[in-house]
Length: 427
Image (cartoon, rainbow, N blue to C red):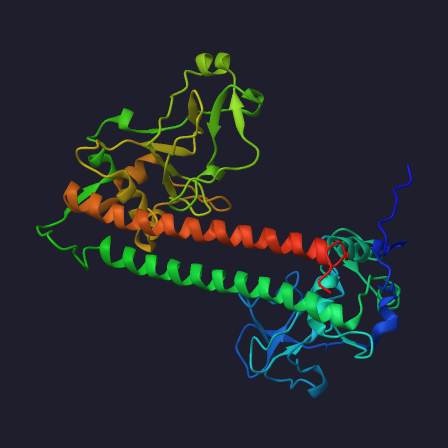
């Protein structure tokens, strides 16, 4: 069926775009394409940080892992990165090849290697490298770039001659400026939320370090803390410190009784996955499964990392069970605040204790007996509850910020979709 074109729009090989936009091949608007140097890299810091394919995200540079040009070499001046450079990943897996990111002087000095190409654009046709970074990160561009990759799913390459033939929709220079500004504002919001979340996480880490060790006491609390093992906290009763059930794959169904798996247990928080697992009522009966309830502490005995724990939230399921690698811990509520304990089970001290008692070569695991023997130092219940409340309030604030960040990212995706196809005009 032929769709009627809106007045002022035209059909092109990159889809419907405004009539005053052009559709050049990338080679027609590029001044140059330059591959970086073939450097031996080292994890030992030198004067020359080296940007590699793993440092390129979609649109931005990631510096969480950084290698350096080996001290025995010195990099060529031509391979030094400049503010606003658009970098293109020529070699990677098929899924990741063709990533495009913009260098914003994240470091005072850095160089790039031979798996990365620097693209320099013709100022007569292109208003800014920021605009090209956005246009080359649209879903349509990513699909086009994957389409010209050669090789296998694990090792794929994109060659300059093929890259030069990619067709893109190009607005007038004036409109490019407006689009790049709008999307850069969206990026600035995302970045500021990212930084705020990192700062709040740090503050919470500091608070945990002080409050969960008794280094800092809350006003109105005094008295000694007690040293207890987990099994002692459970009153030495197996039904209060027990493992989940041995569920084989043939018992898994699409509905029925909810199965909580090890992947649902994060460090201090429950992680809801898209794909939920269930078993039938019949399996529940024949396997004599143990039902778990909201408020139970679940401790994962498997890496990574072994010992991570969370309090089971309300999931809206009629019945819930868990797997054999999860210990169900129900210290009496008159003795322990479970949110307090979930925070204790998120500290470096706790993970070291678990690691020291874990066995296995490829898959580290701790036995329930060893887990039950770990000792923790805890205050009286009212102080536990006061500490848990402060840390929970911090978690609530972090969750709200993370939700805002997810929404900001979603809005930016929508803006890219509308602005970079000309569906919404800014001029």
